[in-house]
Length: 210
Image 1 (tube, rainbow, N blue to C red):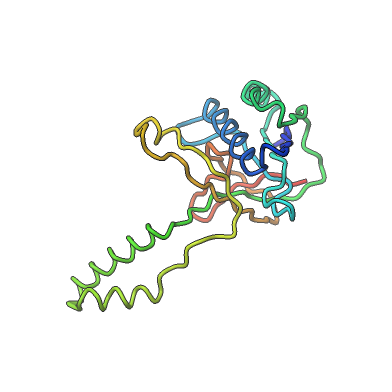
Image 2: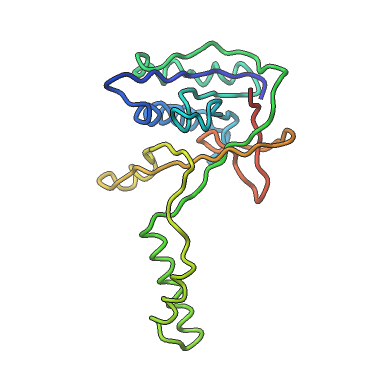
């Protein structure tokens, strides 16, 4: 990642920062999908320079990074953020400074309570069949070690374009939980179409942090 472009989010009394993150990141995601290198991957990454900010978990700045200046020019964030120009400030494309550290931003899948309960019941049914024990007994035992729901990780509400296309009348909103991992050195790899590290097993992809 040799070049970057910063987007500053400018909330006001009518537009909250969390809602603005939803609108801005949705447009950036659409831009990344338009420029994707295959069905699941993007050559362009994002980072959150103010991650873990005291005032707001993700801060108020989104950074977009690429290997070349032409990739960011082709992404054309001016076009994608046009309707949000009163609430964003898009800076010019700049080279990544020499002084930097390395981090990775990864998506974390956090189960909701309904999904956790469903998984526990399915495991209890399977255990009951295999062991011959009563289903209630198996369920009570599994509930003791049932994972806790919830996460302190920051997230952005997004709308799934794929789900909307398949089911226009259904809910398409989901929380995109984002974790930052500090790294000792650069780690090459690929990014998904949210601009986050595309994980392959334990391998994650770094972005420069400055």
